[in-house]
Image 1 (spheres, helix red, strand yellow):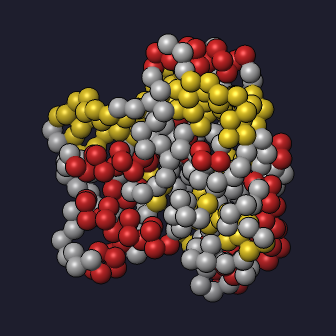
Image 2: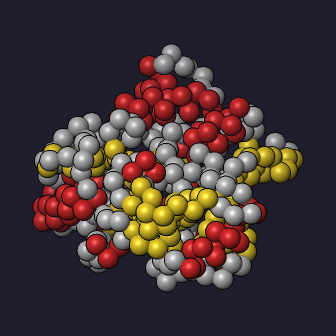
Length: 353
């Protein structure tokens, strides 16, 4: 079967920043039967960029080559035993719809990750996380196709080399992969995580004293809607910067010099995670606006497009924010979204943190 192929295709409605960029060639992949033809089209017009929901992406100019838009659909329970279920979703399934589907089946584990924009296939690429939970905690495995030679591979959890907002799929030097399906192992016994951020307070405001997983999902959605602008109304890609992870001793020195700086444990021993939002806000960027490129009024981590900003303008604002945090606190911020073409973006400064 042949996928739909469009030339000089607008990507404005396919990225949550609403950046008006064009792809030399856009290939829409809707079924597994279309994969060989889609890969052939991409190899004929390199380079290739795999696009899911466009929610973790900043387009800095028109894209040469091929954009592969993954629109594969389907979800199912593969196995269930002793209160544990193995579920699978195709890569093009919207992430939040998938989370709600699992909760409707009485399966727990993804409720803290509700309302994160994007697709299921993109979730392991960034190892998405929110409110004290990371996707990798429930991840089982995924299927992917090599963009280089079309070979198929199953990635188990250890193969993905998950880290804080990263995986093998994001790291330079690794093969490019087209994720086609992702599997998660979920439980019918809730192990609720309520101690991060405002979840307990939100549950109290909702009048919930004995919450279940669906209540947690509802609370998380309420918090996210209050703090994060709707991309359909105000273009954005959610949190633009990762929370920096530094040496624990350095974190304590920073907290002593800057009382109130939130510091959280990191996964690696002897490391600590700082609040990027706090650092940015203390530098005076919250609510800032340069033309149509700006920072959200309600959350300093969110860069926004007020209408006609280009990706280059948003990237320039991001670099000014990084420079000011570096100058005041000596801490390097790194962007969460993929910036493409990456030749437009200055390479991240490597510092000992």
